[in-house]
Amino acid sequence: MIWDTHAHLDDPAYTEDFEEVIAHMKSAGISRVTNVGCDLASSERSTQLAKDYDFIYAAIGIHPHSAEKVTDETWPKLLLMAKEPKVLAWGEIGLDYYHDFSPRPVQKEVFIQQINLANQVGLPIVIHNRDAHQDVLEIVKAYPPKYGGVFHCYSGSWEMAKILLNLGFYLSFAGPVTFKNARHTVEVAIKAPMDRILVETDSPYLTPEPRRGKRNEPTYVREIVQKLADIRNLPFKDVARQTMCNAETIFKLR
Ligand code: NI
Image (cartoon, rainbow, N blue to C red):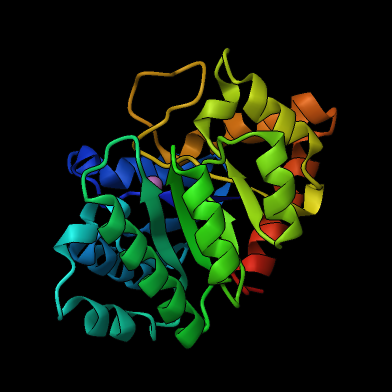
């Protein structure tokens, strides 16, 4: 029983074989998936998938890439979706200074607005942070998410991880923890408290070893669990059980 807490199954990468990907995942013991929105359309698709499949849950939000596309219609529509019972989180939101697809001041404003909205509707947040550590940290300190949050695909240092853990955040590990050059991420994955870590694939991206470079799918979250088990010297099933339990806690699902 494993929960892939971050995937994008509505991506066109699955148009051809969506049902096969789902069947594959179920037979591999992946019992839950959270489908994460990046803009209005993918948030709508996420809530629809959560209605259509009992094992799919949804997160809704505007990714920093799309921050500039926010209009007057965006927030009322997301607030409506947030009322759906299987919408468990507001995300993915944050800052991306690697791609800079939206101007940085707009990214910051849209990030802050969405923390406030998540607080208003009682949802935890899912944070995307790429090359923006300092600004993300300043924002979550100034505008703390009342219902907690997850740093998705955590890739920062142990120094930053300690600060985030002290602020109550969860750290989620994806494919990069299996990569050969992942020294810093592995360090964090060893040192982080067992009750504050999650696993995810970020499918169709970030495929873990040994399939790095190919299309990702929720089944391969097993590689993340296996890597954590190896580096922490724990049985696979203990990591699976604990990360499932952690996800149930932060996403308030029992
Ligand atoms: Ni993602």
